[in-house]
Image (cartoon, rainbow, N blue to C red; front, side, top):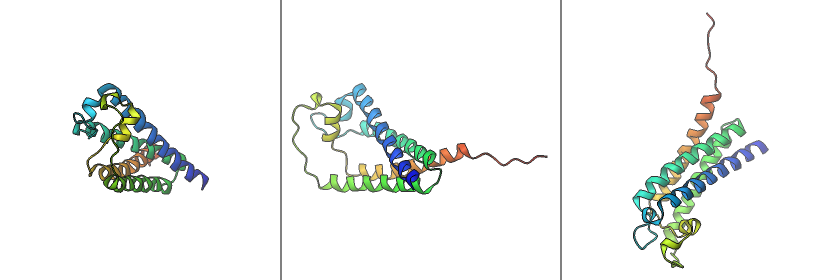
Length: 155
């Protein structure tokens, strides 16, 4: 049981760290001109085309880590469901949340401030729920595929 809980936690942390690091690097390399529409914190299609694949890779890594620790499928499935539920909860929150005013121009925001003020399209968090769910399961499959030895016949 403890191994299963640790697998889910480690998988989720892996995902979170991957997404934070890769998107921070992307922000430093591209800046607000690629991430946001001019003068706003509305996210551009270009930024979404960076974000969604990086999130998918992160969820694959998270699923792989969870599978490696748990050595069973149920904790990986639990992680996949957790990721999907959190993304769906975020989607509902984003649909109902009011947007605070920016404290300073977009160009002066730090990476974490930019992330907290970013306004994604309504469909985004629903897509991320699917991307995360599928990615975690793909990560488990990759791990299982690497550890499964083929059956050979001596002949």
